[in-house]
Length: 257
Image (tube, rainbow, N blue to C red; front, side, top):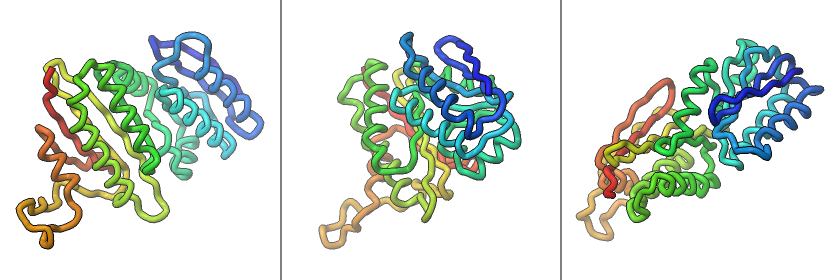
């Protein structure tokens, strides 16, 4: 197997050619780990370009999973692109296409990574596991600090992120499945912050839930249902779409300077 690196701005493209099988997996993983932990400037993203990748076995999948975990720990975006049909089939059958971002071609991967490397736009993907909530909160706080936004204004977004993510964890994960959750944050020139949370779980529109009766007494008050109510009250706009087999909840708020 051959591995060749190419640098495009702050993005490192790793061209993989040949067979990622048991014999090649360990060496491939060492190559990727060295790229992620290089002595030079840390890349904003590492993309595995798979145009020349002819074969992937379970050993190859393990190497890619370890590389994705290392990238996540280093806060480096990690993705694959241009998978051949036979390799794509292995990814889809194993569910790895829900664990690692896969783009149709080089151009799409670079465009996505470039958006994610901007201080005004950040993206992260995690499994729908409650243990990932602290990492998502740190992701939001780091975006907030990098954008120079007032710390006191982050509360609404922290609350919304927790409510939406934990709804997916507790109610959007059918037995035997762990959905993939993607969170995107963006800052407009006018000072508006937009947060989008996507998951590939069963279709569900949280905005269809009835609002709780906040005027009822302690014995009549229904338990639960306040998360979506709170985020709708605290955000300027909230919308839901089902796009490409994924739930997409978008919310935005003007942040005072």
